[in-house]
Image 1 (tube, helix red, strand yellow):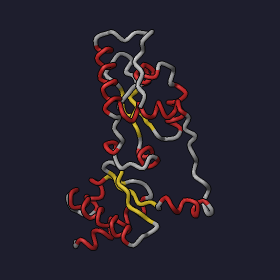
Image 2: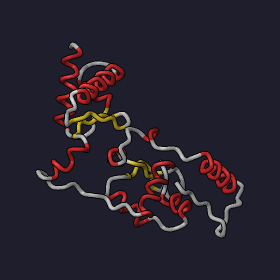
Image 3: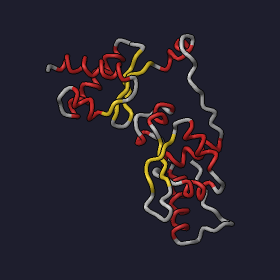
Image 4: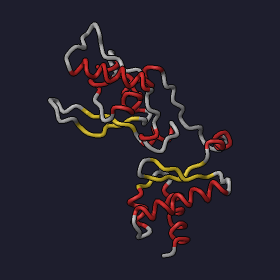
Length: 197
């Protein structure tokens, strides 16, 4: 199969699926290796950009999805039911930041960082499909491990968790100091470890 046809097949699959498709699955469909499939997908994305198409190909970790560009949102909501909007309070954003930067993480670990119960925040973030259960920790009680979702990547306009902004040098130094205090057993109820991402 020639590259032009492979690109057309990839385009058809992404259009038909309406959701993200793993690169490995896309490579399998065109009977090629993942690296060449990635090159074809990137070329397809550039074709859409060059034509200033209302559609775009976006990468979400090791998956790709066809979607409409953000600037057409207002036009689309006139035709379809408006998508659900998130009301992310400071508590939700704080909890989401902890999950994004420390994943996989348990509720107890989030509560230790925030210093307050996170039950409501975690449930809201699960409801918004910004976080999900990614497994169980190998510890007593086998607590649930939480991580971010593809919806999180889409909502915040990042292709990968590696694209998240890194805290500044001062913040990283404070984190390291607090982590060392915690490891040394110096963190106490009066002097809790607080992470401000």
